[in-house]
Image 1 (tube, rainbow, N blue to C red):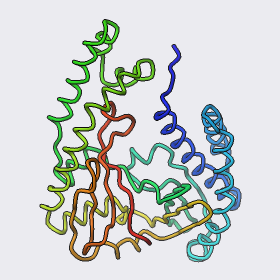
Image 2 (tube, helix red, strand yellow; image 1 turned 30 degrees about the vertical axis):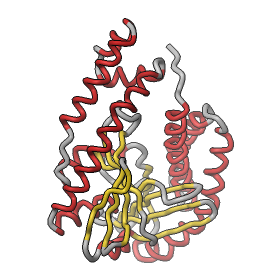
Image 3 (cartoon, rainbow, N blue to C red; image 1 turned 45 degrees about the vertical axis):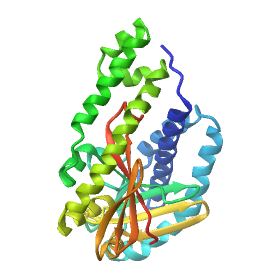
Image 4 (cartoon, helix red, strand yellow; image 1 turned 180 degrees about the vertical axis):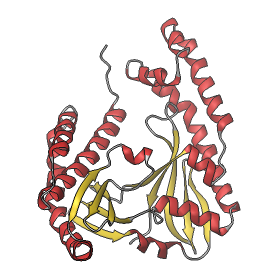
Length: 311
């Protein structure tokens, strides 16, 4: 059975594939420079290029990532050589995290292991404009760190989606009785499912923002810091180098520099219906957007964090 991707879903899948390709290409170039094996990485590269070729302007999107890798690689190698190799020796292994970053709860896209046992992570972002997504925080983590509870709203959302599907026709009534994951998959064949997801998911986003804002402001300072450091990744088990390629501009900074952003009074304030901003002494640090991982109302709830402060 063949499904037609919506434009929105196509863009999301293309963006994920582009980001993955950028990360793999960097891992390949670093591995080549330090004389490490690239066989597995080349296989991943081939798969990603084949995936991107299916999208509109796929060749242009691939070329764009290659150009950014050419721009970044010498700058990154110079940083690694001067600040790490001189102290810890040359890298002995370079690992691309891929989708494992979700399971292992890390901001690292590429991990470098050095001869002396030192480990370094690299968080890579490649954008035409802006800083890109800092981190997606899952609902389970939001429950733990903020105390956010929207179980009732999420259950009601799904009940409403199933109810409305039964009203359309007998085929969609059958779909409505399937599992959540099967309903989500059926959105490619029946676009009305995505429209229902949007309609019933948007109110959940609005409520989540209201609750998150209030819950953050009720936390003691230590708990606020834990939440923000989760977003910034400033308490990793190894050093983390943040890399942003924004058009022709390259920015590199170690994660410990982010600690300077969170001094002073921390306050959350609603920004829009679907997002809120956390400030430090009135200066915006991050914006959090209530979201769903892959399709409004049809996938796991999360909050997507964007860094606002200049580094």
